[in-house]
Length: 353
Image (cartoon, rainbow, N blue to C red; front, side, top):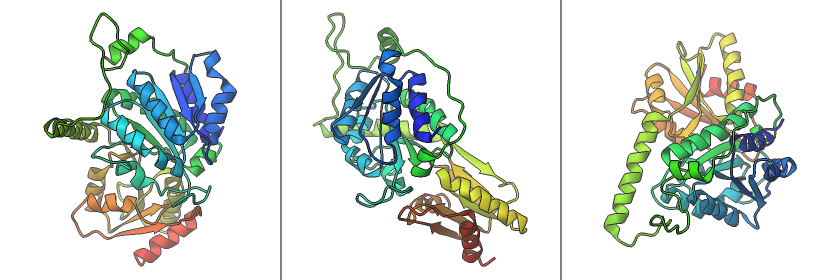
């Protein structure tokens, strides 16, 4: 099935309580598949096409505040519209899953694939000092797997998670093993797992109130310090990456999403010609695998960062170490996806091999 379809199936099987979305290419199949599955008749999951992207993210904000597992999906310009709501969700420390199936920009741009939302996802996007946990799938299988992982991380850290997929992974078709069905949590289970949740005003206890407004600067700073401490904990425990042939590599390629798959083939071409190339694929774009890149920077003669953008992840690669290992970028824009030969040629040209 398509990557977008896999997300929809995985959401139903995870026991998601609510999906609130709005159509936009190249992610519309998520909403369409959920409408075809009609989970409101089987699991009780709410599936609602909102009147806008802004409405959809605020429905997630409201649902997540009650402890319910809520998600939304969109593509690049649609996620731009969601940024205020995402900032509120982060400030409220609410668990939620946001899918961004990237397309080219800026502006309305193109409906073709892109990775130019890296900054939007990893640097906050909205206002304030906050972070999303950002997962970057590179296969249809990971599109399915990261739904459960995303929600598990969201609840563990009370933090929104973004699955940052590119249009290639959303639209491509591969075999996928779907997760087993698991029942939606009861209200009693939610109350135990989420004692902070807004539940109305029961007579048995003082009701929780959800707000992200704090007029006392000292209390606002205290909350921000708490958030930064939480982010440090996430960085220490949840950094994920995948390596290929890095043990003896002399040149390192860093790439995520569909580009990492393209670069794996380029790496094999280089190895066939006697050039020892390795590949590091960040799975979490935030937290970024800086420590592993720093370690490898002392081993290699050069690092090539390959992205479907003008050069965004390369900034995090350069910030990962203080040495003089050269770092170069190769990217395509406008919805053009490079092929392995282009990457191999760029590698040889950048490092004069």
